[in-house]
Length: 272
Image (cartoon, rainbow, N blue to C red; front, side):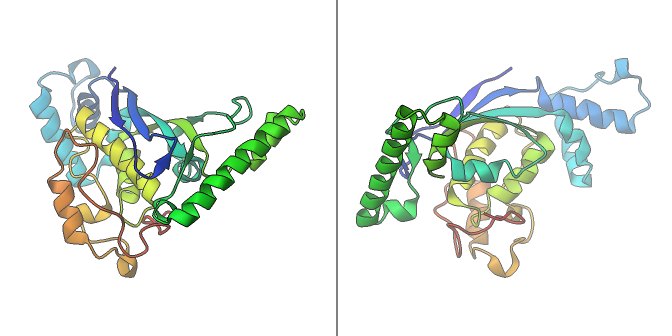
């Protein structure tokens, strides 16, 4: 099992660092997928499947089945990511991807500090006067929360005053097929900025662990026409170039903020 980390301070957070770690994965995920694919098309018995399946053969077979659209065999490779410092607003978007398993830090059993970690949207951070009011509101929420606890209000009720901006921790497990779909939707420049950064960091780690399985992954426009239609960001060439030139060691592709409707817009097929 392999553990890898991508992250660091994000300019758009206050007190919360977005950190993403690949906690666990299927051992030799590309071999596991290749064996499943070979089983479908070969008369070999189970104890004969691994014969002749080296890294090169596995890569060739994976590329072939992905090209044919036979993606069910990708479900045999599973990846578990730990996410720290994402907002509750973004985690609510994340759990809409239902073909996955999630474990999230409880606000019922884990009490928040008065100066709880929270995320500041870039649109707020860019406006100093409003950023100051935003910070004051976060402090007021934290004070009220602690006052409620001190008065004997159960944490499960006191948490009602904590905002969507509150940072959380979550572990998410997806198979390779669902991850490819997740990247297609959430790496889009029209996806909300925070979950897009999460998706890009997860893709960076997935590419390091299984480069062939996640070859060509990214927003839908990387491998075909823009799926957003009239709501396109208008930056198709730039996006394709950024993903094709994305070096293995980089956490994210070299792209700026979203295009038309970027912040607060929609990723393909996913509201919010």
